[in-house]
Length: 277
Image (cartoon, rainbow, N blue to C red; front, side):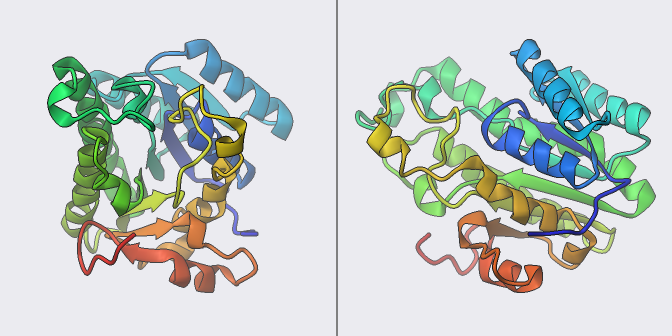
């Protein structure tokens, strides 16, 4: 396990109330970071998450705020609250997203062809998954630049899933996010602020999976906690020279030293030298 402390660091985790977001919030807080979590809806859920983790750790490490990442004013408010409550902002985890179940609850067994997708549903998914990370990063980067240190971590997915039939607009939205990752990393080169993608590396037992999936199928899914160790490494000083890439959590070997585990799990972001994964 990674033992490097994130004491004194401040993170925002969008979509922090469940699944990957909850696992990452708990991991960051346990490592010593102050964490602001958000959700566009389910305010009661994220408030309970914050209360539960704070009680578990015996200190006020997590603050919950209802905010919609598609709204610029909400993104700015999230950053302002992090700076006011914890004294700064070091880490932005763009995790909030909408998946294929918004298109159809049976998307795994009955794919919806792109021309059958409702227009408003398409716009909502693109707005959350593409515009949301942009608005959050735009609000966060000025604070990171002033301190000469920052981590932007965009939650992405396997490239094969981006190309999967019937996965519009979720697949295109994550392909766009990877392009954002590569371009932002270049824009921020030499500033002390890095931008990377992070993916669990396979289908994961989160709210993206429809409720009707059988227990046999669900038992084969990755657990959200798979993402925590790679996240903490990317958020640490150890990853200072890593930017414009992505880290596949399923390839992370906890038995290795962190730098060796990272070397085995890092992949090209976007489509550079892309193998089939």
